[in-house]
Length: 253
Image 1 (tube, rainbow, N blue to C red):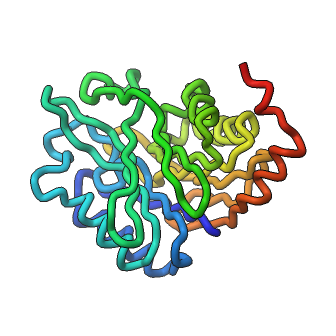
Image 2 (tube, rainbow, N blue to C red):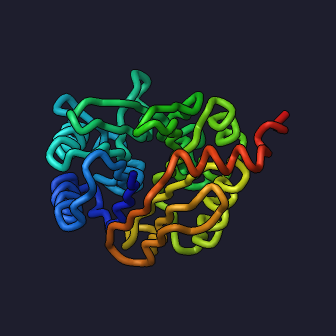
């Protein structure tokens, strides 16, 4: 099966423009039916602390877009959204929809980016989440989570075989993004797919480098710097054989 990363320049706090961009990129890429397609963190708004402006309201516009697009393209579609809690703070979430347009899983970012002010505006999630896709157990994570390997280890202990990371990761720290994605793949003997935005927002510049990485740490696909869609094949049987031949995970304590 194939996994895809949709790397795009996010129009600042403009849902309609971002929906149009994503749909256009998907139409051009023609993803394989039943594949898993990843969109960046807060793909419909950019990494904004203006929760009231970008949150899902009664109309649930971003969720409805994801549900409709998953049906239209016959794919599992995962993207970043913002919801609000009763205390008024936001939740930075990764949500995945099935080809039938049904919500399959919802993960809340465990590690808000304190340095960027995110923890002032968004509450932290409590634990990793797993869902099943084409036989894989998949654990979704978000951006700054990548710097905290303990959460990925928890997911692996619960059975994760494929890890997704959606992000708005700036160019100044892009080598960290590449290295940490490979490290999470190697130490957990898991496929890792990280999708990052490109372009600019009011504060930062982003150069993409969305990656799909094998359980051995090999880069299977690299999106480079601009708007594009990349994909790679993933094999559950190859992953199981690799873990069986090199049973490092059995020594976890």
